[in-house]
Image 1 (cartoon, rainbow, N blue to C red):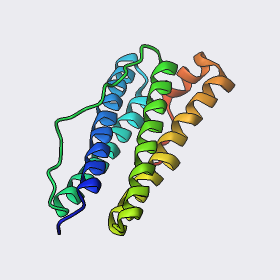
Image 2 (image 1 turned 45 degrees about the vertical axis):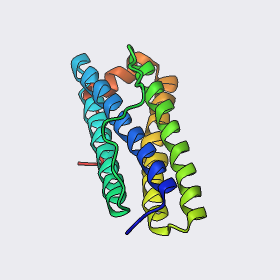
Image 3 (image 1 turned 120 degrees about the vertical axis):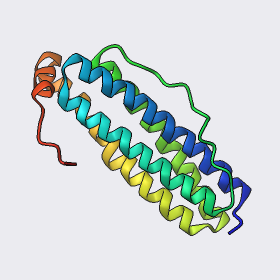
Image 4 (image 1 turned 120 degrees about the horizontal axis):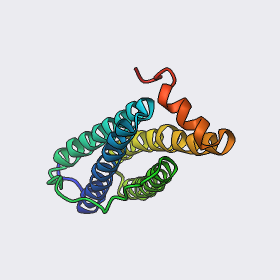
Length: 163
């Protein structure tokens, strides 16, 4: 099905954002593992995998619309040096992803592409209600518990709700 050029461009912009987020989450996950923070490693590795699932959905939709997925482009990622900095940078990037999603949803509605809109809305739900919310929680926990207690908590971890 021949899709709108504007929609395909927006989906490729989102694809770049999702792949870039996966790259940033991957390096942070590996740093957490290197620090001995296994629960944070597990969670960020899970988040990286979800970003790759989002990318797969975008690729499938672009192909369906007879476009060419751009899997080579990346946005500049920011790698933190401390746990709070890594969480803040991941949250900042998640806000970028959310902004792009909202713009793409508006465009899909304007173009009358409701299937693309539905797919993007699912990605927005994941980004807002899972990814960004969890990162915001971690920053609140650091504020409430103090960094040392948070680190100790994350070294041991919590049950993984995604397991």
